[in-house]
Amino acid sequence: MVEESRRDAYNWAIRALSRRMRSVQEIESGLLAKGVSHQVVVDVITDLLGMGYLDDLKFASDWVELRSARRGYGRVRLSHELHGKGVPDEVARQVMDRYLSPARETEIARKAIRKKMGGLRGSEVREKAHLYRFLRGRGFTSAAIWAALADVEEEERG
Image (cartoon, rainbow, N blue to C red; front, side):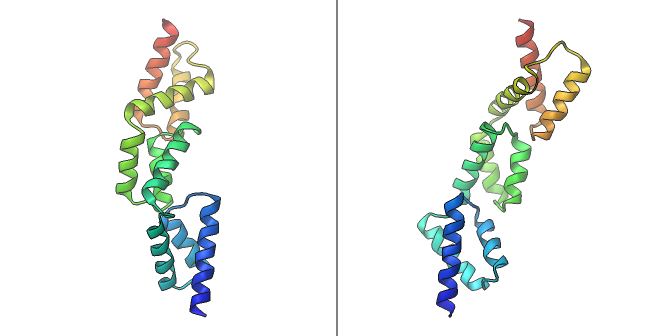
């Protein structure tokens, strides 16, 4: 019976991973929610880690790359999302430093401004405030937002 439970747990984890990459915490939570015993969860996760099917560093790297490039999200939001997925803070920090430098975050913020409003139309305080709130909601740092706003404003002037 225990072996059948282990096999079922392993198969569930493999199916979950076949749909998309997941963090160790997501697989652990999913198995525990299904009523799998703690020891079986530990065994399955150990096997998956050993085979390279689970890797929080790879998961976080792919997550940040995808969500920053395609969705236009910034460092704050992505850190929060990774935390919610159970990725250890040190792994998240390492990935952020590697894939989302301040210069890259500013460039993504610039693209988000252009996409949202086609750039700044004049230098009205209200419009800048609106764009600032929009980018803050996307999780960009204040430094990246102000740099992006200044860059877009400079481009439009000259």
